[in-house]
Image 1: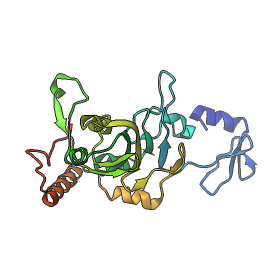
Image 2: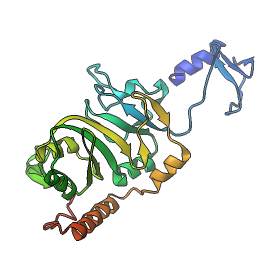
Image 3: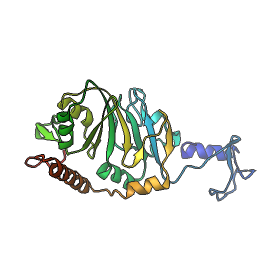
Image 4: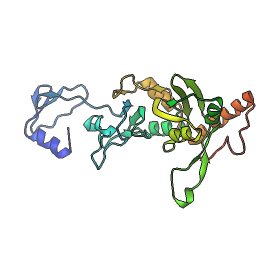
Length: 261
């Protein structure tokens, strides 16, 4: 509805009605069972916590507001959520797909610390076995940051890659700046579109631009992942070890336990 001052102004001017009674001066306890109207319009109470997933279209910045007035994901959430919740992680402006919003710190930690992210990469030309192999083992890419202490290169943690129509699917457990695009470039793929299909066990909504609340079961499945980044490192290390054992791959020194940036 707005700031406290605007709410007080609405109450004092008799614009608020609870269960058919105008509120002016009387103190009234209002709970979720009450029917509240402001200026004749029904007011729907917000949930105690924000937990939803959004199918981000291309062209939006992953930020709640932008000082230059550019279109951003904050434009699509209910106004009452502004200043209350935010997106978990980021998608590039032209990247589409699953983006979680929440004001729950534990859920945020679980997603950033341990949840997998599955992407669909549309590329020009065929994808070779060697390119898939490199993506799964982890590729060496230039650091995004340019400070003296962080200059150089690093090797991404291992993932899961498989061919699909138009390109490939890539599942990773990291969330570095523009990581998937940089991985694709490092192995020589000509990426034409990038779409995030899922965050952990939660698939992206079907319709572009739609926003829906997470179900209790979906929230529980994300919490079960746990908040530990160390645990996610261990999962990727185990994955690489298993793939090396099956395929005779050599992980190389430090590959399985690669430190995060």
